[in-house]
Image 1 (spheres, rainbow, N blue to C red):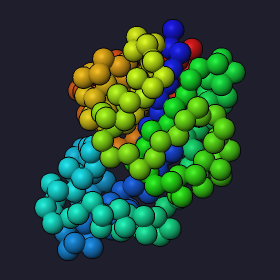
Image 2 (tube, rainbow, N blue to C red):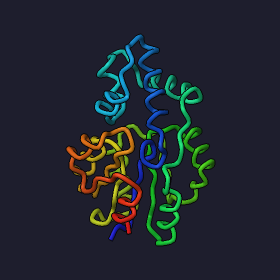
Image 3 (cartoon, rainbow, N blue to C red):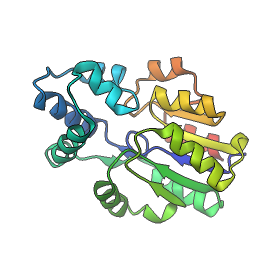
Amino acid sequence: MIKNIIFDWSGVLDDNIKTQYCASMAVLKAYGTKSISMQEYREEFNLPYMSFYKKYNSKITKKRQDEIFKASFPKCPKSRLYPGMKTLLKKCQKADKKVILVTSDHKVYLYKLLQDYGIKNYFDEIMYSVHEKRIILNKIIKKYRLNKRNTLYVGDTVHEVEVCKSLKLLSAGVTWGVCTDKKMSQAKPNYVVRNIKDLNRIIF
């Protein structure tokens, strides 16, 4: 039985692939780099996110990327809470499951959405501005003394699946985020999640 769930934010809880794509293209454009298609973006994006940008332009710095990315959000398509997630989080809280949020998103923007979606109080801990998830996940495991056999990480990138394998954590890879179904399936997480019903079955 799953007792602990660690969620990624972008592309998992926050249905924001169009927002992320738009902001990422703004970064490339600011550096005079040609935009790529949404399909290529979903096939090539991975974490840590700077590895993606460096692939297209080695001059992009993390500081400048963060500034451009953040500034472009108001001009990009609005995101939404993935359908069914609020109900799922309520069920987790009612079942006394530990729920932790780990994201690379910045605090101000993240907390505004958490407030707008009405889900801020469903998390035992919220960790933001995270660039290297391997380090943070290891700290979380030690801090809460989590049993890896009943701890599930839910993400949307190949890198997150690889990190979970290295830490011997259970992984669930969603296919509605930045990673295509084919790419996620090839990464071989413990679970490939194609809809909210799949995630419910895994957790409950």
